[in-house]
Image (cartoon, rainbow, N blue to C red; front, side):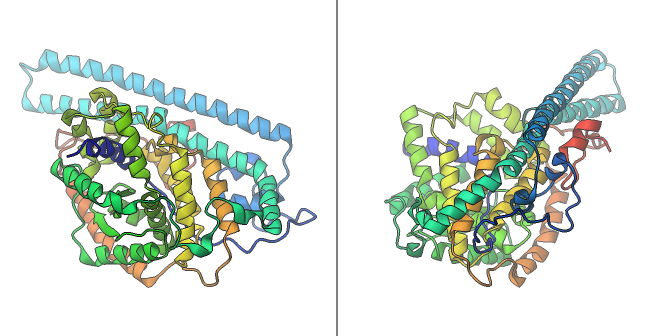
Length: 492
């Protein structure tokens, strides 16, 4: 492979491991002039404290915040409480990880002492204890280093939104009123399909083919999902979005049989959607938003730009380092967490995304273009915000993924998305849900259940010993507040 291919694979795999989310979707109402008097708070809003509002969705807060009145001291007090809560909760789980580590050392010493004379049952029990402690220690470390900070970042962003969105909204309405919003970057939405965002898309086709070939050769690409109905459905949605985008090369779509909530684009019009993302999406507009975002990465040639920077920086990786990334093929989440936490540092992967400029700029560009492409395809553009909020709230701290830690701050991303939605002309009868999407979910359900069942019998870094009790780990319930996990250590 050429000098460009391997550095780019390293970069793309880093994206693979960090939830490349994303999803533009539903349409905001047509902009109206800012009211002269503050309207009454909507009926059904039962929150009485500022902290209560932090459990609401971003979409709800965009609607509610102009009606809320809290003092500067209340905002300051809540911000301080969140900072103290983060520090305390992180400390709790760091201490727990340290305790598990000490217990693990003791059990390993015990295994060494009795190994020669232990019978099979005694050895099995010690093996079970050791792997259980390893799993609990890794989970506690992932929570302390990724999950808990992510959850508190999310709440800080919602606090910032409540405080600052009313002023942001007035500014947006003023830009709409005076027409200055048309002068924004890529404001020429009537010309989508005829614009050239970044020239040279066709030059990426060969590079993309080489990357896919090498990833498959090295075992870094999950297998294709063996279901034509689902493959054809996802392809049909993707082709619709592509036809209403600035992509000027053919789009090749593949659904991968992986439980990760992820989608990613490789250079040259190659889009991969993982089974876990199809399971996480609740409607077709969310899926279209994800696809729009990923197509935007190809349109703007972000991978090519990363490849050039990687080559200039001399970034490279070795076979031993790649081995840690094989876990992207659908190993249990705790195994993936183990790779994220220990794989890179333990194997010395020489990769600094900030050095390469793989930063907020690319994601924000893909957000804006992706929202435009979903809108131009007739989809409800609020899907971006709905999907993001769901992942950040229900999956972000639970899965411990680092995507939220390296990409644009929540507040900036949500406000920029809502701003773009408000700037786009309103379309009637936008698509939120379709019967084809619902049929896809029905077809997907038994495939996912079977895959989960099969996964239990596959080797795992942390669970090599069979026949052991499941480790008692922190339980996550959909939408559960981090407050509860921090207050009782996650035990139910």
